[in-house]
Length: 255
Image (cartoon, rainbow, N blue to C red; front, side, top):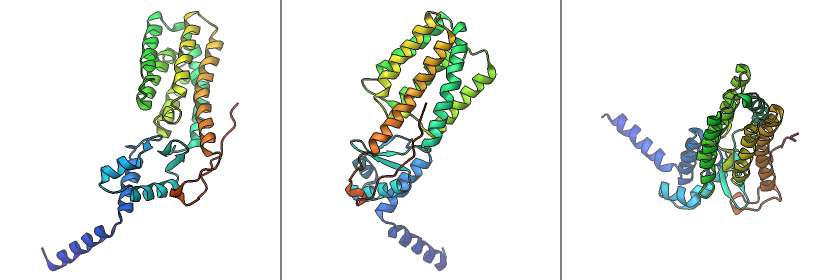
């Protein structure tokens, strides 16, 4: 190693040492959010993060303030800091569109859904119900997709089915689980699943089934919008932000 290498190494060490713990905490959280290790809706517990990084909660709190200012983290009353939705407006558009195409695909699939298909969907819904007592929003979302797949995959219109698949893919890119934001919605969702299954089992008109499936999807979207509105009013006061006003996000009115 040359003297120049030694000098360069010393400079690098000095630079690394100069990084504040707040910066280290910020870099750690920012990278994990960017990699989706911490998915939208994930609750950020200051003490747990501080323990993981072997530091006090003070620099972690400062790092979260920076992430909140950048829109990567949101703060909600009675909840705390969470990883923000990546694109709230895009999420609303995607949910509205998915409600339309998934509802139509479910209605068109209904006449071809077998008794075994209904049994499979009911079994998945039972697993969803079992999650309610010890709620895991990400596991719930995965099972929720399985449930709906059983009901729309028999759609005879391949173009429409492709649109449903694209809608689900778009949503997964916008958020991992809406239920992380509105866990209370899960109970209603399971009950609505039963209603949709009952409609299909008794041979209801496909249009009635389509409307039920669409409204089911839109009810989840509306629950999310309502939770965001509740979290932002009245204005919060939080010592972490030194009196800064909460971020305001435009809500779209849904039909």
